[in-house]
Length: 356
Image (cartoon, rainbow, N blue to C red):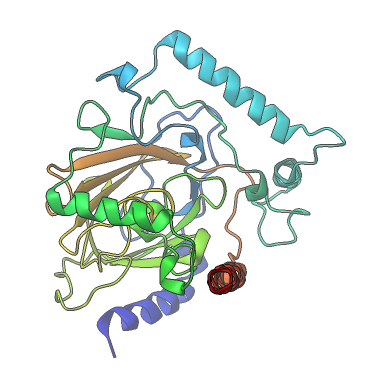
């Protein structure tokens, strides 16, 4: 049996076997986001457990607008403008009118009324993720924090070729399943694509046991099993969409280095963008800075695609009533079949017209 498959089954059994007293309860989210002493698991690791979302970074572009130059943060006046837009969206979603029903409002009400954290599909009429939104205005001008200009570094010659191929594919009507992205085919969004904020499905859940950390992503339902026992990476012959993660602790920070990618996904929302090479290494850092906040960093080191490493950083937060729901992705497969059928019908019609 593959060691990583065995680790997954062992992780599930171990988590279930831990006595209730040893499973650290989720901390109550702070309304003010004040820093707190870092909670520890019963075995002494920093406690990152809980359900988190990248919603507060919605609206922050990956690359910085050139007008900001090397400025990572908005000015006070610029921040006020963003706060106004965020508050308008927040009020519209949390306080819907009769003709603007908001599932997020129902989820918030259910969470506020519960004596314990809301759980399960019956905790509210509909999940709040259907109305996903930023609760706070981010001060950042871009998700990219390095290089200093907040822009992607120049591409290598190989990276430019992959960019041209990706652009050509986007402009092509899908006539076969390979014309669709890995995300469209409901296979994976990759490491970066699973946490970068998009229109919905920005939730992830972290679970810990001695020697392991598991991260479960809501959209496309990938789960990463990350050993923290000092082991080496799997052989380079073993590759996958999500790569091979190996973690370790640096003080209160979980550092995860992931290699062994198959070169199919990019570093963009939903795994889009220029596909990374098989030599790509991603280094993530998770640091709990408040009872409802974890600072997340992702460094991309892919010398075959980019001329220099680059870094993304933003907070992920714990929100009342927010939870992970099943992501049933087979609908996308139906859409794929229907669109391919339509393309083939158009091609047959065009071929018949040429004969006449």
